[in-house]
Amino acid sequence: KVKIPYGGHSSPVVWGDRVFLSGANTDKEKPSRVLMCLDFKSGKSLWERVIVEAPLEKKHKLNSWASGTPAVDGEKVYVAVFDQGQMLVAAHDLDGKEVWKVRPGVFSSVHGFCSCPVVFKDLLIVNGDHDGESYITALKRTTGDVVWKTPREHKTRSYCTPLIREIDGRTQMMLSGSKCVASYDPHTGKQLWKLDGPTEQFVASLVYNKGLIFMTGGFPHHHVMAIDPRGSG
Image (cartoon, rainbow, N blue to C red):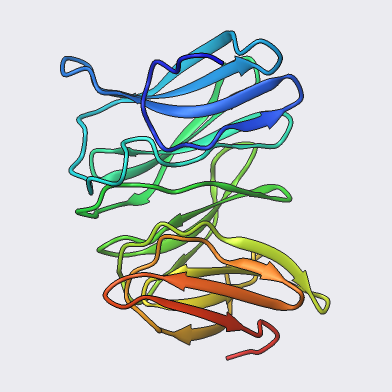
């Protein structure tokens, strides 16, 4: 059991003998977003890296300034943070050396920021649902270059992590948010199907079990829904 020096809602991610998580340094002089690496067996800090020094954005009282969970692929660890109106995605090797850093799009929300990267083959996928020109984008894991970027038409904040599953021979990337539940081909970003509603705002990610996806939301109305993901259009 070890004390973490920085606050945040990031979940820890384990790869081998290392634990990764993000945090926010709320020091008024130099506020920053930090990526941490701990030893799995002892909890000892192995390294920490400042991803960006930036002012703390306005947020909901239940959100944090480091809510995004990192993703690891065995070679690099990836994290998405907020940087003065933009999403910033950074990649470090497992020893903490920065490999690349990119800003794939703007982000605006009165409730603050959260986006959890998802590793898919040679891509890193991040959700940019926000109160503006919303998007989902796939970055090349080696360089951070944008491979595809798909707009989200309803332009409404959400914080849902895409869920990727192979269903009846078709790879689907599914998520709620932006006033709908939708599925995309993660290779290309092309939309496969979309279900409008049933509510406006979403935070929780989808769950897949026994051929169905399960959705919960949100605001202004609470809903639980089971959806057959084998459709189209």
